[in-house]
Image (tube, rainbow, N blue to C red; front, top):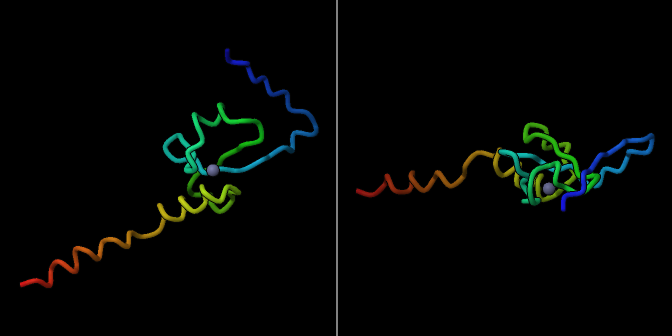
Length: 82
Ligand SMILES: [Zn+2]
């Protein structure tokens, strides 16, 4: 079953495939499992550093999470009814 991934990093460990945004233990693009389950070269950053992410899906989701909630004007619309 599980092949132990003893990553012995050599001088050419520059194999970054993508940098994802980790949010509550999972990537925002819904990669399966946790970072140590991901294929080699996939890395992650925190949502606070989402600008450094190279995964477009993660980046978009991070921006969406961090941006102010726009749907809240629904409650403003409700309050003008008399
Ligand atoms: Zn991602």
